[in-house]
Each structure stands twice: as C-alpha cells, then as structure tokens.
Picture 1: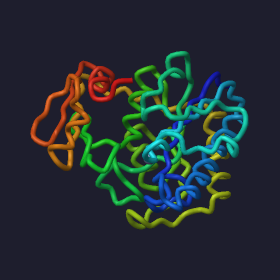
Picture 2: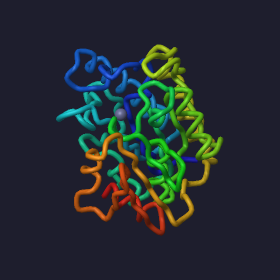
Picture 3: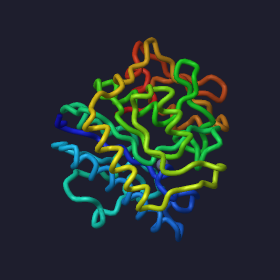
Length: 270
Ligand SMILES: [Zn+2]
C-alpha cells in the first residue's frame, strides 16, 4: 500500500557512529564529519521511503547545532534525491506536512532523555533537567510523537541507540519499528555500526515498516495535560516564560491544557 506522505524528523545525537558533542556542535573540527554521518542516515531513510513507494517525502533537520547552523546541518549536495528537506526551521515547530495530510512519522538519529545513561542524552537543552508529561519524564521523541499525534499521525519507526529505541517502544508500543544503529556504553561512548551498515539497517527497516503499514496508534495522551520543565537553575526559566501562558514554580515552568496540544503551544508555539 502506497503512502501519500511520510515525514522524517532528524536529529544528530542518535546517528550511526556519533559519540561526542564536538561531532554535533558547530564550530568544532569534528562537526563537518558529524554532518556527513547525519546526511548518510537521513539519505538511507529517504531511500527506504522511496522503496516503499511513498509519494511525498519531507525530511526535517531537527538538530540545534548552534549559531547559524541550527537546524541546517544536512548537506544538500550529498542528500538522497527525491525528497523535500526542511532546513533552518525551529525544533518541533514545522507542521505544514501534518496539516496537509501525512501518513506516518519516522524518527532518525533520536536520543534518550536527560538523566539516562545513553550517548549524548538530554532533553531540549543542557539547562533542562527533565520534562514531565502528567508526572512522567519524557524524551524529545515522545514530545514529537505527541505533536504528530495532534494531527492523528503515528510514529512508524525510530532509529538511534538501544536506549532511545527501547524507550520509544515502551511509550508508543512495540508496533513502532526500531533500527538500533549503536549501543550506548556510557554517555560519551558507544559500540556502533559503521556508517554504511547503519545506513543499510535504516533503509531496510524503513522500507519494511512502511510496506507493512500497520502502525501503532497515533500518540494522544489523555487530557487534561500538565507539562513541567525542571530547569537546572532558576534563571534558566526565562526563555520559557517570555510572553507565554506559563507559570513558574520554583525551578519549574508549568503549562496546562485540556489537551497535549493546548499545553504544548503555551510552552512551544508552532
Ligand atoms: Zn540534537
């Protein structure tokens, strides 16, 4: 069964072979190398979509590399042809493809949440200790799944290390396919496939899960929804409070709504 549109959401920390901040942060010698690895995994996912006959493939760069490189680390001259690439758009805020009709989301290069012993684990930024959704700490992948779920779009697959893949399946269900490309042995150490083996695993897993088609249901947490961001320091709250309908409680910024979408928009306007 062919799909009209599949959205790939890319991040760098969970990319095959990546194991240090230098490889994912602009301004470092190793960043150029990290970008090539990132481009390789994303291209592999696009090939998987093409094999499954997807009509429209939209891949978004969702990695904040820093400075003017934020959300624009993918190398356009090395990317797989046949997809549209969204560059420079704020994290989790590109929703056009969901609004106009999209069958599934594929998470490539995902990473575990802050506090997990997992390669480059964090949630949104180093100044965030934790984000809780109705009391439960959640990963960026869970938040992205809930944003997609607002439009009824399910997550079909996640790629990254063993920790994030297990976490996504525990939250969204084991019908979400997983392409594990590395196994974390610490926060800055991994046992990884090489780039070509990682790409082959991603391409195969994406093609297979899209052809199979029976996705987990869209992730739509039951309301009312409370989102709590616990900051490392009280002053870190500032960026999450400006002009938004959030409240501050100690080191936390809190947003509430009848639905996930209503609470999330207060924290993170689309
Ligand atoms: Zn990232």
